Length: 305
Image (cartoon, rainbow, N blue to C red; front, side, top):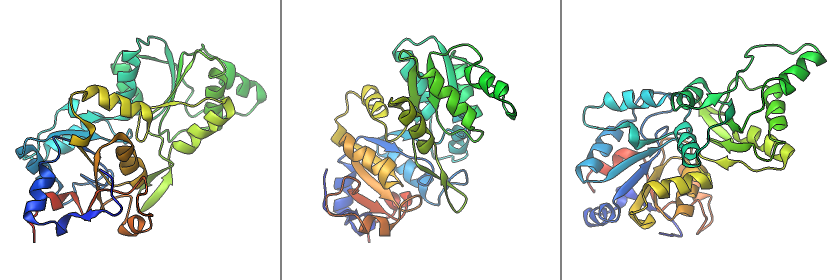
């Protein structure tokens, strides 16, 4: 569905709302900024909206770029809402997407992973081997730098996601390992910015770009808005036409742009990364223009005016 300007969901008539609900079978939904405030509580009305979608028989999949939290933490949040029922298989997490991709290609080698502890633990739990790191060490001599960059065993894949303990030395080691053309270069989330507190902080995207530019290689990106994630979602829902999928997100670039390029219908909610002013600033027909805009996910279960 392509539009020159989005429809405001709360302005739809009762008949238009029913037509909307009848137009999709599957919902891909972001979590942070849509279902709950980033790393915090459920947004008012979101649990009721998810329950309404499930009542209508819609199949829900939660597509998040948040690899800071364990999948179990996401499940625990959902479990606190009695009216919402979510299974582990319904959450698409960057680390899980990477695991699925590695399993699909039969990968069994050593991994150098620049990511959070939850991301690394999910890889280990899936049976993958990660190279050891000297966390917290301070490089004081050229000999120590040489050991940190060139020491240790060679790896067969480099994975980069959010890493709050990222250092120049780690990026240098990733660069060295990727000189081997048979070493895979994978990325989870590739956001330039990620929400934190009352604003944004630098995301993994710029650091992935540093390694990409220094090696002349582009990673396989398995978080939004990566092409590899798009293919993975298509494989998992091969029987569903893209136009029968609704994607709900709070980011014009990571969510709506990704969904539009995938052929999905789109709903932007204004409880996260993008504002109405951001939407208004887009030229007609822009690749990030949503089909619908809602104040929040709860608009889906509010009655028409």
